Length: 240
Image 1 (cartoon, rainbow, N blue to C red):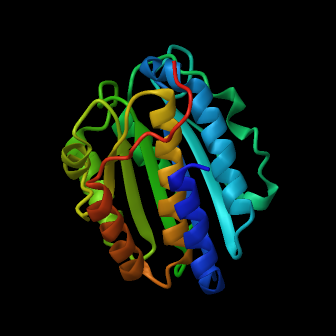
Image 2: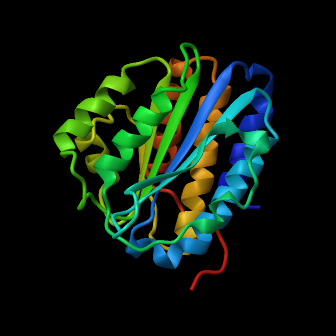
């Protein structure tokens, strides 16, 4: 069993009694062409993520979105809009098809605005952004996106996790308004690296769901960052 997966299950077991209220867990996945070699890893990684949280206590609402800039298609496609995770089919990501450019700013803004319609006071939110490239196709500027994220990051309900490959993720996250240590990690742009990143996202999401409040979650996320140096190690396994 992969170490990150083991860590997630240990965290869940340790804090399961603390799960209460509603948690919105969102995964926003880059569907641009460069992610094509990692297509299978995204599909299986999302399935594993769903399976992990279908076994946890408390009310969890699952959001899944893809983003790219491709002729004739919306830049952002919300595949799951906050349905209870117990009702989600584990094959939900089977339609993931990398192809276009990277409208990162537009995708983040659209997802936040859609989720904000459903999030209630006292809920917990974690938005995981996974990308192997930088913004290159949005109408919204990075300055505008940064202001939006900063606005929501100040709220008790909202937290963000940026997982990036082929970039310095901490610098990119800071440019987008993510100011908290532990909210940006680098992963390898390979199938194993992508799988590991989604397992790390599950570990982080467990902390968010099971922590009693945002300050406890941020302390756990910061400790995890200090342990790894913000680098997600590739799990053992075959990769081509």
